[in-house]
Length: 572
Ligand code: FES
Ligand code: MG
Image (cartoon, rainbow, N blue to C red; front, side, top):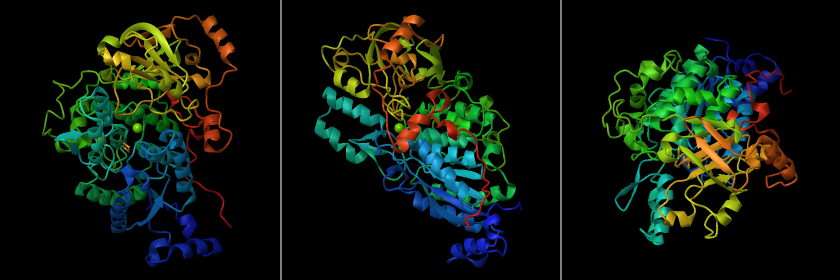
């Protein structure tokens, strides 16, 4: 056995060791804090205000049993939780705060290993960022998607079908009362959104990075196997501590490239770009936007899941699960990266049959041939912007049109349905002030609604450009994460309604036909105008002063990198 980190608290006969032991023995076996048994924190994002993670206390109990069974000592450690649908103005504002608070508590406490219980969108990213920065052995338990709810005989996809049903109500194909009735069926029970939204995507990411027991991601929250695998995770973390296997041994550059391939193959959320960049930043791994274009380009979408397809997470599990998808793209994965078990991910991809090829397509008949994220650059996005071509309309991937510019989300809401708004199907909708700094927190508003008068004409998609993100459950020809954002002085701040915008996804370009001098002159003229957030205190102030741009993952500048697990001073 390696020397245990916690032994620095518990071993010895001085007053400090006495204090650490005395307060912790209560109720536990006498040898639990004798400095020989791995101390395992279960970082638990259970919260009644994070509905997708409400069941994690039950999961934590299963993990605890596994830890005891393997000779470790488990502790429940409640950590900051974020309910995607509940918190305002956007959960993304606090991803870094959650990660920072988690990291500090992981380091400050006498623990040797971590089990990370996550689920809802931001929780797994924050947990992984924290674990990477402290680099203590860690395993993720993905809380799992909920079972499928039904409304009037039809399966409901969380998120995606809220947008669809509200549009149907607007169009009059269902009544408003029926729309409201569906509310009761939308959330079937425990677990996170059942689409391939951000939560499901980040579970796949955790697995592809090697940070879960292989085969865990996608196990439904209500499935008994979730608790069995949680118990197994409790056992395994004790082994991991003994072996001294740390997050930095598992999450290598190649593991990140594997995660990019996995996200592409399951048709995952664009939010994974932000989270992967931020996690890599904590590990000092040089992952760039271009890696997404290079590694994800040409990967076929094989999982027919909402929002890009038809089925839901429960169907994916029944059809063979995440590993059956990864088995189809095994040749695109790096073979070296190991998982928490010590064995490479690719070792788990043999003999993974697909039980329903309507849900998991074969390589010869993919749902879509090319799933990657395209990175666009040009004088409108010098440091890059992203688009998911598979979610876009093919006829708009090369497009020239006049900009219709909105200065803020409020400005957009106020004018988008105005019958007098000068807009046609060829217009390019531009929304600014919604980046990390400008909003603040970079909300999921990039997939702006189309003007009602164009909807009435049958228009179903338009080019949209913003410094925002979009929900993992959304789709359209939506160019996101423009960097630098308007509030950071990016050229997006200086574009005007009527300027001609050119998008060419094939050529990876995004430009406006205004020359550099004119853009700069407009910049100086606009410098005094501030439509952007200027918080004066609290987290929002710290965030706005230090948040980086989307092209590097929107972490805080001083949180990039690792501080390791050492604490040099005692408390007395
Ligand atoms: Fe929590 Fe969708 S709201 S995963
Ligand atoms: Mg979301």
